[in-house]
Image 1 (spheres, rainbow, N blue to C red):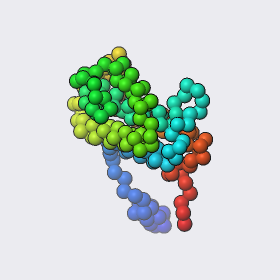
Image 2 (tube, rainbow, N blue to C red):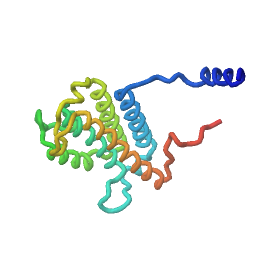
Image 3 (cartoon, rainbow, N blue to C red):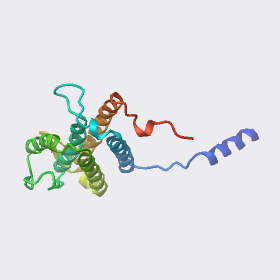
Image 4 (cartoon, one colour):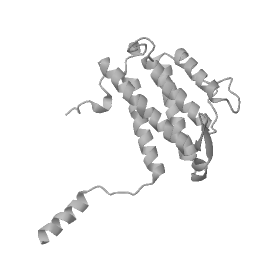
Length: 190
């Protein structure tokens, strides 16, 4: 019995401290993780592969990354946040979702160099994290419209996370087909 108690005590000391965190911290950790991997993959993909697409009518590498960034900006605008003037110079104070979606499609064709794509992606993921961090519970619970459906601001932020993860998976497949190993899954050098 003493041996069992000693073993349990040693295991408790050796185990990392468990911190109980709430939804906000958990969300930010998930968003940071997915955004970091997506950005690392965008940086690892060779510039000459940014125009590659798996078939006609399917987004290219650069178009996927710009789509994620434009999607973040569109969703943040639905949450009442201003659109960046660098990408949306003609957007008014409350642009319609269709207008923002159309502009996102234009950006997919306009922003194509690796440096510009990665820059836009980094700007978008930083904005998503910053705006979520700044939103208090009242803001997250505020009613919102999401493509014609009544919901909350919280759901819009959840969509940002889901959308990032969706296209992270797509980007992993694009990278692997093009011989690029996701940086976080490379064997560690000894």
